[in-house]
Amino acid sequence: MAITAFGSKGEAAVAAKIGLIYGSDDGNTETIAFRIQARLGEENVDVLDVSDVTQMDFASYDKLILGIPTWDFGQIQSDWEDFWDDVKEVGFEGKTVALFGLGDQFGYGDFFLDAMGMLHDVIVENGAKIVGHWPVEGYEFDASKALIEGEGLFVGLGIDEDQQPELSASRLNKWVSQISHEFNLGYEPIELDD
Image 1 (spheres, rainbow, N blue to C red):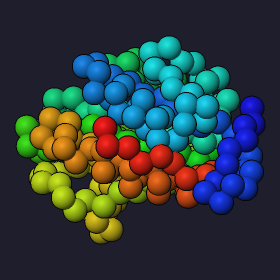
Image 2 (cartoon, rainbow, N blue to C red):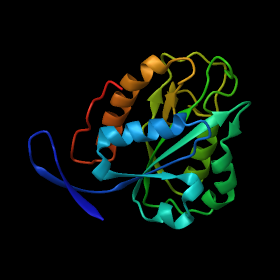
Image 3 (cartoon, rainbow, N blue to C red):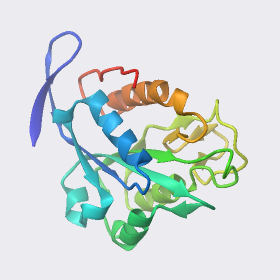
Image 4 (tube, rainbow, N blue to C red):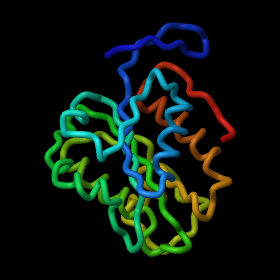
């Protein structure tokens, strides 16, 4: 499905819809998913709960944003865990994927964003091209499976709604702008102070 959007200079650009698939137990990851959609435009992003998807939903999009929180001591969120064997079977060849993860860097600093790192490893093994790497500056944690060794980057955007909710809007604005260019969308996202 193609849509028409207009860039900052008014030129028309055609882009495919983005599939944003998330899992959420307490609602924080769901809220972040819709905050991302608001920046990119509701008409440009389909937001889907992983508890309601099938492997075919992944196949419907060339561009995907996947959101996953880390629970307790590095555990995968329950709906993603239920879908884990299925996601291991999804072919990501030809797909560009951005990741965002939620975690608590002070309460669980030894496992910060681990689930995002684990999801990254599965989809890269299945052929995904990853965009949206994010700097580790501004975070305090001890260890993370989401780190790219030696690069000072996470595999995707890190959000900490427990300890740093006041930084989420600016992080989202910067990251969504970054991935809009890396996705080659042809339009600028909206900056929000939400």
